Image (tube, rainbow over all chains, first blue to last red; front, top):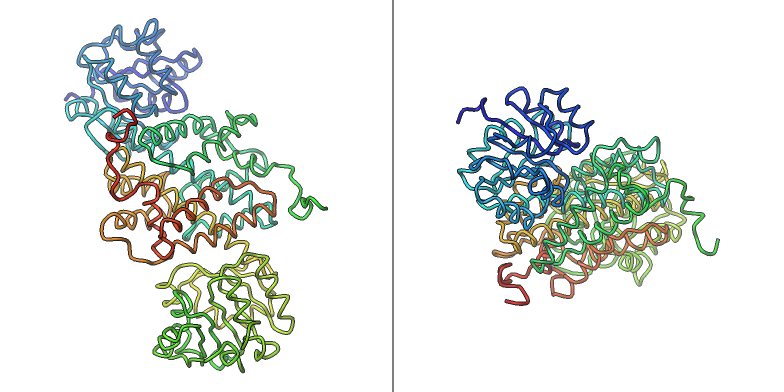
Length: 305
Length: 305
């Protein structure tokens, strides 16, 4: 496999797609498309060739990397007007990095019978995307994976192949998101409760980030929740991503007849956050749904006070 | 403070009290009481002097260590027939290591006005108790803490003083239990979902125990959940402890008017586990409530199949 001569198309230049395009551009000829002109220009500034449509981006591509937000955008990019499928060469590898759920990935793979489909949802965030340090979980046949491997190796810190079928990567990613989304919500409950009973939340987060109560999300989002009460947390991962992803989780669980009461509760919490105007805020801001910024102290809240 | 001449009474010789008594016995004269004769004999075998009643154990004690299950047992041990309060010297330190919630600790402290009260709930489990490697979170005034310090130092790997009032330690412990109980339940949902959709749960636990989905509980209880489907998990921490502790959490949150939907869902899950006959089983066995041992695979469960 000639590593440096593969032609790569990147469709979707958002929080993840743009740094992935920038990471690939020094090693591969990259054509890049996004619906927003500003994002296309940003990709051009990082060495990619901007394309006016998905079809133009996909022309002659050996590897098509989809980094769109959801299933609807993936279908539009591939099969909509000027869609990539109209020009994508037979035998090309299609790498789906978006989190769309197993049925979504299977549907896309089935609609592209002449291409090699690699279900490869990513996690790790924009910074790690730009450094090639993503966690990528893959469902793909060996031949498809081999065709996409040079591109994936440039992006992944860790690549785990969970199974041979499109949808297998999505399944593992969904379980990842179940845990991540529940852990963020649990950290929010912990911070909100600390505030409500008059303990210093920063002391609580610090004290509990080592032992049996620890999680990656408590250590990562806990301090950002404290920021949410100060200047506001920097947006590193939008809250509405978890509205989408907890929907994928609870759909998947329901279809498998597995109760997931905590994932369901977390889903409701992210929906409440969206309704509170926090869709585009950092996901850590969900804590303000449980404990508003201007809430009175615990002592003032008794109904008989 | 003469470290080796303090007389210590330990009341409650269960999963935590017995190894604590055994850890203290080489350094202090320890008198030990439990309602079960077998536990008193086990403490005697580790160097403690068994007492026939709480009152006998407390006679002449400088430090009384309470390691009972809950508030009801604490009240009975102190104020019931032959209770420790009838003989405990004025000025003695009372160390409450049990998790009873802030109002419980405050009530006990108020009922012992002539003693020094140290609210010091512990976590870490029996093995770490026997090694003196517990996490102890303390609410106590300086003088009370100083009186109990030699005993606490013999038991603690980490000791965090969160505030000066009895109840402050319980408050931090409750937040610890919120996170721990939710994280165990989240791990159970992850394992159950993996089984339900036909992914190997051991691969899922392994793959997700490093990144953004990681928690202490996923790495610790995840493998024990797999044991629950094989020979059954060794009982290291009883499931019904979380019925008690999530009750403390949700009471505390409700009293502070803080919504905790995930803690509430976790509480219901532990109650379901208790109803399923798992009260004395390892808490990791809660996974079998979500995904029974003999469940059919995901493909066989469609209502139209």
